[in-house]
Amino acid sequence: MEEKLNGIVLGGVSYGENDKILNIFTLEKGTVSAKIKGVKKGGAKLKFAAERFCFAEFVFSVKSDKRTVTGASLIDSFYPVREDLVKFYCAGTVIEFIKRFEIENIVSADMFALTVSALKKIAYGNDSPRVALIEFLLSALKTVGYGLNLEGCHVCGNHIDGRIFFDCFSGGFSCENHKDGFSREINYATYLALRNVEDGETVGEFNAVRCLRLLDFYLINKPEEKLNSLKELLQLATEEE
Image 1 (cartoon, rainbow, N blue to C red):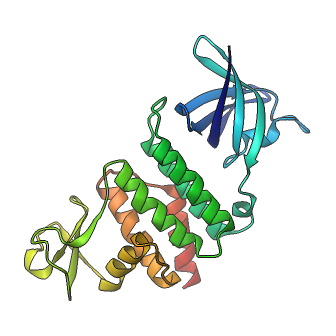
Image 2: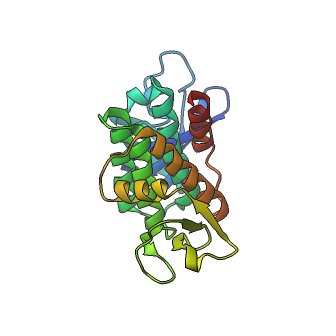
Image 3: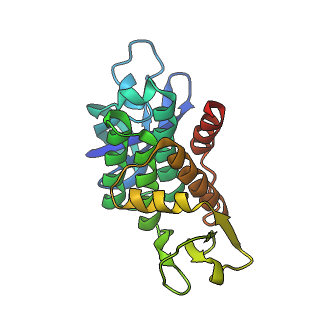
């Protein structure tokens, strides 16, 4: 049976001498695995289709629920992410998030749209790729049930002015009067920057890095997911300071 799916390559592992097994996030079927033959040979026709970030319409031969890539029509390679380290790690974080949170063969059209939009903004946008990544993470976390509550104090509901605390277990922020033993004080500018990004506004690079550090802390402690590309991105920012 032949099957056509629109998908983004999340990664792949070698199989045999010249083949690979790809992990592909598709619009129609969620994440799927598929063998692609001969792509490690020089000049292989489908070599592009085995590259991470490749967005294409894939043609599969399906037999006994196992897929083999037989063709692919490139939609976008997001090539600029390969020419800039910040873009590369931002795009890598998006891909790793999908690999950690999307369940095989479970359709998530909203997440697919978020992923394509984020990769386009990171690769081609005029604004900061770090801000595009923050925007993606805020929306994606909400989609998978781990959204941050940025609407004032999550205990009393009042506007927060002054010292502010983040509770990574609830994903909420609190005022000084309602902090608890699990809360971590953060810079108020970080909270404002997160709100600005959620509202579609841009923020400076310094505050963008602060936001990403907070999101990294949250991912490690709440859903307990460590995204290696995000760690590399933050390390790069430390080296630039």
